[in-house]
Length: 281
Image (cartoon, rainbow, N blue to C red; front, side, top):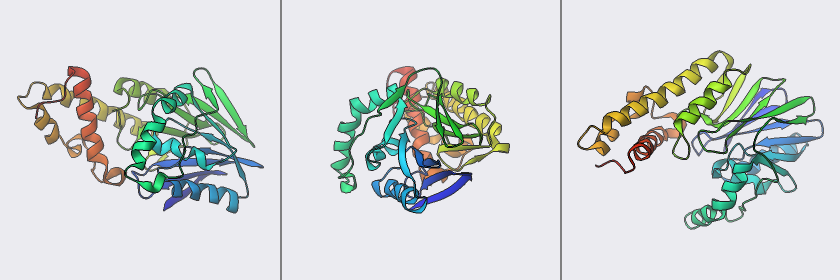
């Protein structure tokens, strides 16, 4: 159900096999562990907990949410007794829409029957916060753009960044802002990085970091240009549909086949944001 990878000593990633290659992580200390994000479905999140508690013999003391979206936060409830950390806006967003979103999900999928919304107990809204786990320093970094509450977790000693959804195989901006996302991506260039764990997608290796940032920014620039061109067409909705993910130099098989859907969502979101209306079909 999930793919597990060790990216550094006592640092693990967990990737969903069923939902858009979403990632979570864990940092294992001498006596307890920290989980970064939870996965989309309860059984996946419980598999992470089982690995940490039964195989590694550690208790999860903290869960960090990189942002409030369901596939990264709804599993908080499956770590009883753990403190949940996130941005202040993560708590605010979950408090506003979490219960309503969960109720809507339950109407179509009973897999979430045991899910409960657990809000972050400890929050940050500015400055630098660090958490010490054994011999590792976890530094929280504000990375908005995919959503307004995005944070990353940088493991100083291992030079590993858990970037959340500001860094995905295909940028996704429908709940965020493309210009802010580009600023966040550029800010990451100042870090010394061995690996980047994307919110969705494969782990980015050291030699690919800068080119990967450039690639994502180039995509965001390209879709903005497409939207500008669409406004001059008699049927901008059809024009956008014709501008597939392949035209932007990416494969539709990325993220478990969700790439084209995400791409079209991005185009329509940008169009609506710039022109105030949905594109005419």
